[in-house]
Length: 104
Image (cartoon, rainbow, N blue to C red; front, side):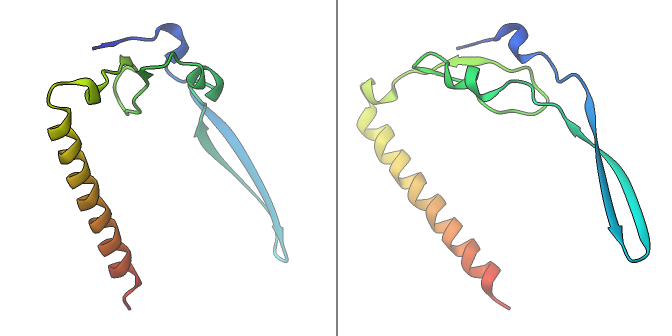
């Protein structure tokens, strides 16, 4: 199913400080926050072999998945129909959510 992708996905090296300075009529203000350093640049992800995936997940070790072409399976028609039905349901929920968020 999946396999770990080695040192390329080592945990981030820690939080990186981000300094923000602003000035106003009352003076100068400096604030320091932290941001997480990126684990892996985009180029290696784009270079993954065809038929593989790197699912985003929080709190678990990264894994490189080998994708199986579901559309070549004997029950591909049923899988396609179920996928289309679920996609339509997700679209309907998203549309309803947008309408609700516009109401006063």
